[in-house]
Length: 301
Image: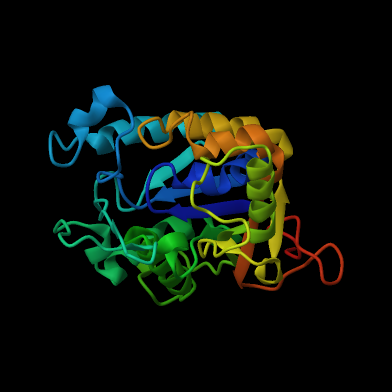
């Protein structure tokens, strides 16, 4: 079997944070890896002072910079096949705002070409073409809440889910290629128990600022999933360095002295070297009864 993994993400940098180590490991093992990014990330916060003129309310050129950053991140991970859904700048970053209860919701004003407003069939058809071309056995995307509620993450989940269904229908859009059914679909996740322990260790060491306000014994964001709901983990400790390099490449979005790297410096392999997943389609094939899968392709012939 020629293994192929397809990942669908909303903005440049989401992929490196979520599955950077998994991508690097599978590339190193000879697995085909394709990344589809749905927007240019035009509405992202800019952490590099000299580049703030690229903001949407100024020059509105951030997507061009983030494309460079994504290219460099993929070089760090070894991924050679990365694309934008429908082509670069086909869909625009929708932006977001924070709800009082701490999760993201759509912004009050949304651009006419925002991904959040995209026609679902049109957007999904772009992805159907990719699916039928690369013919992946495994697809990774967000859960139905988009991790933390970002509208583009939710829309990426919807597009990936619908496209996977449409791609398997022989009579749907024959012009997009021969039908292909994806055997296993996963939603990216983080292990709540590992994050809680990491936070406890940081607090015990006197670090009260990394992920400030996040209580190790309190509520966590929804993408930090209880162990009972996790299906798979990919152990990629040897690729933590590649993941960190990919995250550094997204310099406008991720601060080297920010919480991601602070956590990495203290709990690197435990937090970032093992990436977790929830299965949304397919039959899990754990290494042992009641355990987790350690290979997303487990059980596939």
